Picture 1 (cartoon, rainbow, N blue to C red):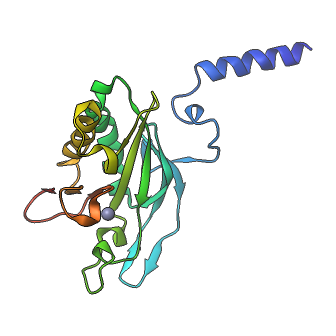
Picture 2 (cartoon, rainbow, N blue to C red; picture 1 turned 120 degrees about the vertical axis):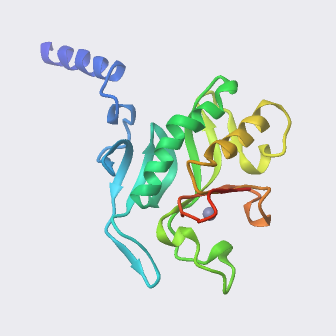
Length: 203
Ligand SMILES: [Zn+2]
């Protein structure tokens, strides 16, 4: 009796205060901090090598800066770090006027051994090196979902926030593509960390 009461108090206390990282994700046991960055949680993955595609020291990212990814994203650490920094420093600011914060991002793609836009004969995509992530939607703590497909062209706060997310990624990421870039990006943002001589490219 005495023991269970103590256990109860202990559990209640943990639920309230908890450690900053894993306690916030009660259903996600066994995750580790990745890329020497406490803001990145997930699982390490063994090296990926598929012909010209692959990643050295890849990670399967489940959370960045407290934001859950809908499916684990396989990335290299440079890109995972950029994503975590962008979420913490830029993306949350971009949705501030909605008086909430991003809690989840819907991942459409991460590592994939394929050409750009899956077009035959095109150059390999940055996805093929773990340099890129595609995000289709952002879920906020208040239940609002900002969808690239539905909200990009809209007036009002949600449209403004969706476009602000795109703009805020330009700089942190070397390439940012959205619905204005081409027909392939009507429903998601493409972010990558490839370095181009010409500087950042955002459309
Ligand atoms: Zn992409």
